[in-house]
Image (cartoon, rainbow, N blue to C red; front, side):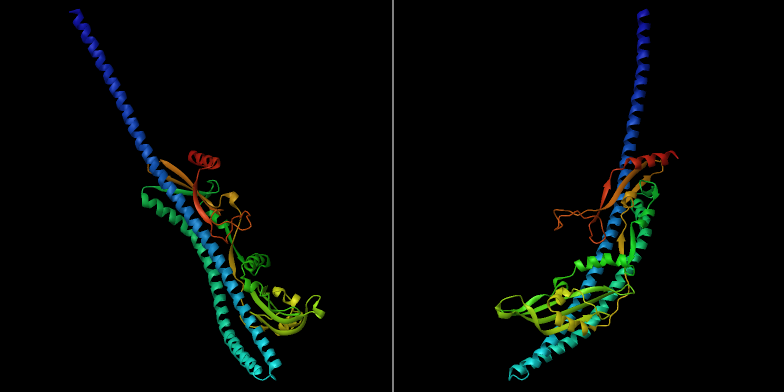
Length: 407
């Protein structure tokens, strides 16, 4: 009888112990399940934050690439104007050369008739092209002004579109999520620092115009830069052709292209010595707007063909198309303030939060787009090489986030 009671008490203690173990296991199971739900939710929020940050960086990169391409378009249209002015000068030189040749050969039978016909044909071509080139230059000038205005308009509207873009990305995932965006190490609200990333520069400012002038002159084609070669080259004589197109800035800040071409006969005495200019054969000069009275480079025209180049400069004609000052977008190198980054915080109704950071950076791939000079290229708004990238949060970012959460 005593043994039976003892056995019952042992069975009752085991039951109580098992109930406690089952309760503990249940609590652990519920905890693991809750942690799994929390982890899945955190992974989801992190995906939303990454997508929002990357999308904002993509938009910033596209904006920078757009500004770079339109700056290139401004340069391209200026180069086109230089080509038209240079071609008008070249045809004017050919017309004058043909006239001079006709005058010299007019007394020679048959040859005089050929040169007279040649002079008439070139004169008609030159007159017709002069009318066409004026229309073409006016069109290029209008395009330049349109691109300049579009740059300023789209840059201003882009700042207002960025928050709407982030809101659209987050809401596509869930309408129950809220978000915040920051720049500058998570301190400044996004996109407050974006205003400082770029600036409008104008050719009415001599220093700002000089920067774009240098890039434009480096972009000139060989015909515009230097039209120098020899038409004839024998032992004692040669016919030297020299010419080029130059850029000047008028008082109002507008750009003005002008070109000069010259042809001269060079010879040397007694079959020895250096060649010297002996006779001017032809010359021509055109200006987009204002005639020039001072010598310029013109592809070494004055250095080689001094006589014919002076005649060309004295008879320079204006096409009569004036350019107004125009603006272009420049880059402020302020990346130390994090103006090219965005930090996104996404939060749900349970105050669970995830953070992500992305950057729009300038990067030239050396294996794909290498520079011929092998130099390092700093970020700029003349090459469309901006790309987005998701990056880890810095220590400053984490410190600012922690302090903000505590507040």
